[in-house]
Length: 510
Image (cartoon, rainbow, N blue to C red):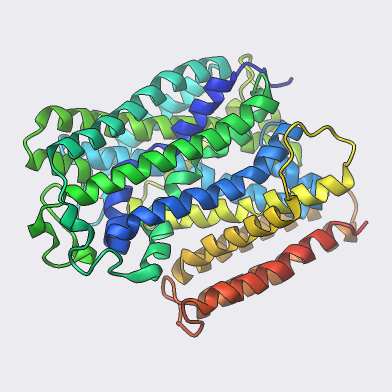
């Protein structure tokens, strides 16, 4: 049974917008300002541009090979099963976490008017909170079970609301007040320097707020006109959201009262800052908009979680097609939806509501998983151009050799900036995945022993070891600061060039 191609260009664009505009706008400007000060504005611009560089590689791949769970298939076609499992494992792990994280954000805001569901001291859900989270997750699964057409119509309505509220919020804040002096207060425009700006990309939730375009890639197999719809959805959504987030950050910085900054941007706090924009507007007495933001704090995270519930099921489907997940996940219901994938993702997601860190603590891990999976974009693009030169490419990335190398470099920088405390957890997750692969391989799921499977992905082991070492000796997130800030850009560049050409060379092994 095949997926139905029933998602139009606008619906796919809105799915990408809906994946991007979630809890990031509710929390990101506050956390980014604490890490970078007013220069968080620059962080949003840099973050958006970096994600566009990566997204351009997937725009060509997804329009050329529009299949469900595309990232897994790209890796399998270019480097074989071990590479595709590594990418698929990271995509699945990161995607399955998004719905719980967005649900957590929803309930964290809701705790302001539903007491007893969230512990503000430990930043974890209480028993009643976990029960409510389960109900919300079940609703998302049930809604997604009715197929792509229902999904596209529902997401269109939800995303429209998600976009209107932040736009109204930033306009209202600009109208109410704008302290231009805040742009140079408490240490100047860049109180933490360039280090703070780059640290804000993972720690301030900037990159997390941009990674949501991937549902447009995962659902390419259901697009009516993928050659037109996918570039529009991926690039269009990122450009729009760069503008939106920059304006939101500017409005947030300008709205700060001077007394909020007496202890500096790093210690920025005010009454109601658990829901930053609602707290600011409440201080100005704009209660009508506070009510709307609280409502949107349900709709925005729910909408993103709903979209990722759909796309994650497609990743499970692709993992099944390549033999990594049991064949039972390959079955579609009468609406053309991988129902069993929805169910297993729900079960795994529920475990994440156990006492884990809150929103800000979880996004860095999600970012590192997503970005590691994104490395397949630039590598697969160049590999498949060589191995499948006759396939029609309606969208071709210009200067592909240079652009893919830059995109690969960007991916490595983004993982490095999450810091050692996140990277070592990423390495543990990869090791667990590798063990799962070995078990599946030894059980004969990929046929008889074939050394090519291992040789084509041989570059992965030194890649992860060196990336971990650079992170350990770097200056971000618990690193030893042996490699000072500034020099690390050069170190990552040299590492990226060697790994990039090593990965492409390994794809030639047969």
